[in-house]
Length: 95
Image 1 (cartoon, helix red, strand yellow):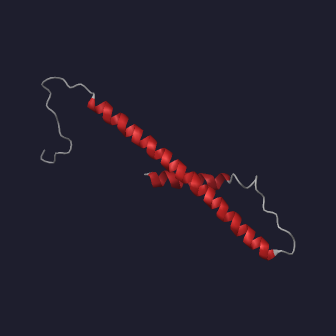
Image 2 (cartoon, one colour):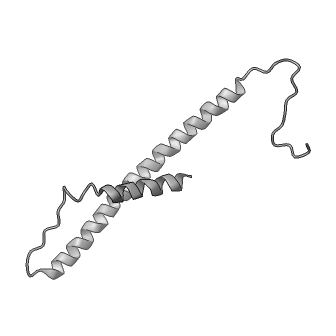
Image 3 (cartoon, one colour):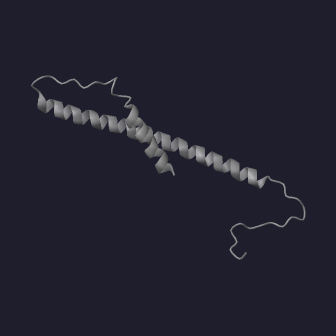
């Protein structure tokens, strides 16, 4: 599930391209070698930034899921049962 969230986040980032406007690639005429290396370097920098954002997002989502699971667990433990009501084991296959 976390993988799907991370994948969705990466796809959203690719659609918006937040670094394109703030970091234009300028090529000096006659320097194709430098331009190729520079473009590759910038791509790696952008990928590093995206990777960092994805890792932070996944960590945040993990903490949110753990928090929600704890809330659900606490809520189900605190549900009062009516006296005389039989308890049902949902994991029991013998029914």
